[in-house]
Image 1 (cartoon, rainbow, N blue to C red):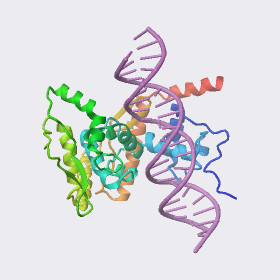
Image 2 (image 1 turned 90 degrees about the vertical axis):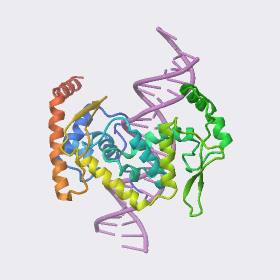
Image 3 (image 1 turned 45 degrees about the vertical axis):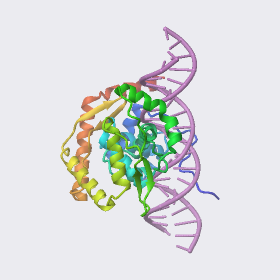
Image 4 (image 1 turned 180 degrees about the vertical axis):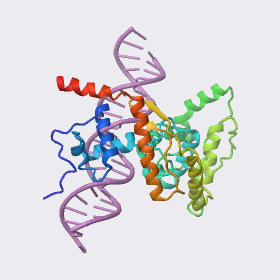
Length: 282
DNA sequence: AAGAATATCAACCGCTTGTCC
DNA sequence: GGGACAAGCGGTTGATATTCT
C-alpha cells in the first residue's frame, strides 16, 4: 500500500483563489490559528487541499508580507546570498523578512538572471560565461546601452573564477573595464567580488541579521495597509530578533488583530455577504 | 487596432525532510 | 530502526498582463 495523497483531490477546487476563499481562510486562521493544514480547509469550509491553503497563506495572506518591487539593495543582497546558498530560496528568503521564497525565486528567474547574463555571469554556476558566447548574446543589449549612454567604452564582462581556496572571485580582463558609467552594474560586480572572494561569511550573516533587525524594528508599529490587485498586506512585520518568542507571539497576535481591523475597515465585507447571497441565489 | 511575443507571478506538483509512534 | 504522515522546499506550469510589431 502506497503513501496516501496529501489530500483527496476529487471535488477539490484548483486555480486562482477568490476573495471569498481568502476571506474564509483568513477568518479561520485568525480565529483558530494553524495546527494542521490538512484539516484547515475542512474546518474553514474550503474546497481546497491543505497544501493549497498553506501556500496561499504563506505567499499571499500572511499579514507580515512586504509587497511591492524589490529595491536594488535587495536585489544585490539576493545575488550575494545566491552565490553562497544556491537555489535554497527559503534560506535566502529568511534574510528578507516579509518576502517569500516564491517571490524571491520568481524575481530571480525573471529579472536577476537577465541582469547577471548581461554581466556575463552564469546564474547557475556563478561562473563567467564563455566571453565570446556571452558577448555574442549580449552584443545587442550592450550596444543598446552604450548607445543610450552616448558612449562606446568597449564594455566586456569580468570573469568569475575560482581562487586557490575554492572561493569564487573575479579575474579582471586585460582590458580593464570602465564601469563608472554603469553604477548599478558596478555595484553588482563589487558585491559579487566581495562575496565570492574574500568575504567572511560569518561576519556577513551577522551583519545581515543586524541590518535586518535594525531596519525592521523601526517599523514595528507599522499598521499601514496596501492593496495591490486583490492582495491586502501590512507593510513590514513585527519581526524583531531581539524580542523574545513569547513577546513576539503577542506582538504578532496584536499585529494580526490590527491588520484584520484595518482590512475590515478598508474593505466592505458586506460585498462578500452579497456575493454569498448571489451564489446562493444561483 | 489587433495579433504575436514576451514578461510576470500565483499556484501546482512531486520530492525531501522532520517528527511521531 | 522504520513506517506513516505532515510540512517544507524547489522546479515547473499556465493564466494574465504588458510590450512590440
